[in-house]
Length: 59
Image (cartoon, rainbow, N blue to C red; front, top):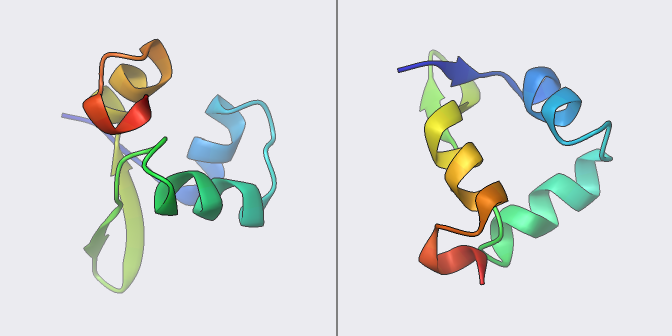
């Protein structure tokens, strides 16, 4: 399992802005991050599923 930092997530999403990324999380288009050591990370496989449209919340 690979964790993506916020900057890695933005890079994977084509350089999307901070506000847009958090709006996508809030509206269910991207998975919720997890907090590790005071920082937020996203599980790469969940992000990939959301981008592929396989995640139910991504609809």
